[in-house]
Amino acid sequence: MHPAKRYRVRPGRKVRLGRWDPAERCELARTDKAARASLDDLLPRIDRLQALLWAEHRHRVLLVLQGMDTAGKDATIRRVFEGVNPQGVSVARFGPPTPEEAAHDFLWRVHPHVPGAGEITIFNRSHYEDVLWPRAHRVISGKEVERRLRAIVDFERMLAEEGTTVLKCYLHIDRAEQARRLDARLDDPTKHWKFSVHDLAERPLWDRYTAAYEELLERTSTDRAPWFVVPSNAPLSRDVVVAAILHRALARLGMSYPPLDPAVRGQLRKLGWRAPSTQRAGPRTRG
Image (cartoon, rainbow, N blue to C red; front, side):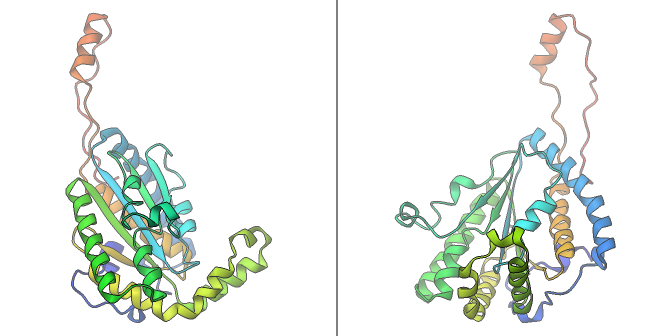
């Protein structure tokens, strides 16, 4: 089964993260060797489709990455997008709101970062942070959580109606794996810069964050903006799942290279330049 089907949160379904095994490896990545082979196949395809997306300049793609601390958002971005042309791909990161951001509605800081025509934008954390942290720390009411989730659904619907493909991946790890990764950061001097005592301070709230994630996954996974629960204890399998989901979405856009502008063709004739090929580049839906 394709990862996009296996790990998709069906709209209206109850979500209990305890029923999703964070250590599961997808069919394309049963071993690390198989995972690397799958990535060697998928990443060039994504690169070609991203170039086509930019050339056609019609569609937009937003990839949202969420997860507990150490779930691997940065590593996923590095791996899945390692071969793409930086032109047309950007990353936006959302931390605690600044005083200026907090003075506006909670989506105010997000909208300027959504992708334009031909672009892929990755949200490393996202607009969901303004539900998760307040919900886990109990600084907003259930009524306000409900209002914000409705606003997010409306926001994502608007993006989809304007031509944006919205993909949302929850990188699912368990608490023991998080502890192992935090210890690994302390053991590796090259990763000391990534270690934050804030991550330790948030660990006692694990169950609250889990409940908050379950609620938003249930409420905001829609046909046009689906959530995927990506098992992430095994990093290479995680990367394969995200890459496969992204590749499938890009391939389904039915893109093709634009033909030569007729005005340019006319100018070439006036200049006595050779006539270009009239064959239109066909769709490359298979990447």
